[in-house]
Length: 369
Image (cartoon, rainbow, N blue to C red; front, side, top):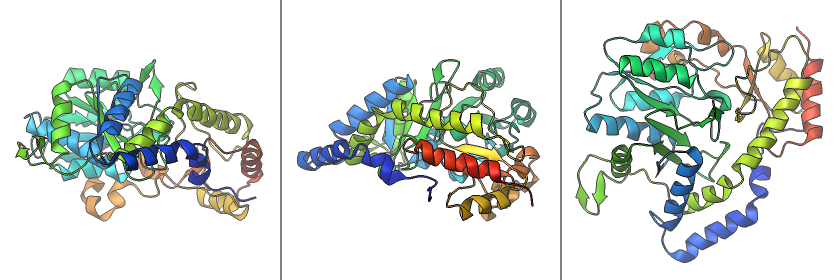
């Protein structure tokens, strides 16, 4: 049996007729940027995230960058201000900070959830700290009640990186509704994935929303009037139309992911394989199912020999990437070892029970070298 890490063809095939109809509708309309499909999706996504405003962007990195740039335009940030980010995250989180002239401060993560550790956050706050940038890793929210309390005590802005947490909740509140703003990616492999690059900013702040939209449209709110040094980062009509189709199915697809995760959690019993720790089982959206194994490379090879594709999120800590080598002096302890032990298993809505059982059997058969 061959089991891909993610079968996007199968995932999108379920909605192929709706997706094709959405594309045809846009093609026939003759309007391809900033039209009714974008407006419809932004309204629906804002409602889904339980916030007032959603602004489509070209991708998730741009969503992060545009919020930080908007805060600089508002005078809330200036070059050199510090942004606290988790040491275990995709490179885009740190790239956005550096790109906007700010200084990323890598902070350790909880050894069980791999999300930000609140004690480490408190210890890292200094005189130049201005922003907390928690990442909701794997589909589980960071400890937002505690982080928001920390932010309030120290007068910090909070930007949620929700690239892996579409629809996730904590204490009943959606990802994206906790901070002052949030950034989403709709990269094709996300739980809510476009058929190309796409992203969005969500916020309850009307002025921030207006500014983010202008900055992503060449710094313009009125055609040929450019009030800010902006960029071109807009969610096009075809991607917006397809995302609107897939948004209607997101909660059902999430429930299917949860069933896969529950099967893994209840049936993998190999003592060499550490299973994910879950804060709220009914709120986790399982973008990734990440196990912890001291013999990770041997486990990966064992699964590959049986036709099971896996992935590593992430194989290198941030300071091991050349552009960010100067961050190596950050006091990161727990996350420094994660990249040697963690392995992501196949998990997606169309993964069948027979395939799940095949993966589970292979995991339980694994033995130490």
